Length: 164
Image (cartoon, rainbow, N blue to C red; front, top):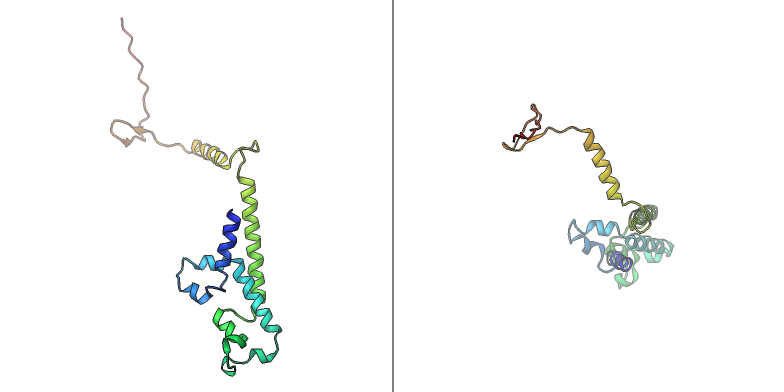
């Protein structure tokens, strides 16, 4: 279910509908979602590759056409906010996103449901490490009556007076 939700979120932030220029107006909170969407980089590289494969007649300035939104490839670039010759950047970002998501998946596989596999949870291992480090550091004792640190005088054990 989470995979389907992630795919829908990536499709929403691909920059097709709504366009990148409209998404950028939403503020800084949306930028990581736009940059983290693999669909955004894939759609941009596919559109740019398609434009570069077209003849020069399709790449004329938008004012040259009677219907620029339908006939001009450059008008499409301007509307969507894509860069025509950024295929290497787009493919590099796609590769980095792929490595990031693979590493995230690996960590999820390694560190979840460890108790069902008969292994210790990472939280327990961290707690043991913390206990070992805390034992190395000697802390001053607390004077319970005054509530202040009594670092100079150690607490004395009081032996009970047994008199009959």
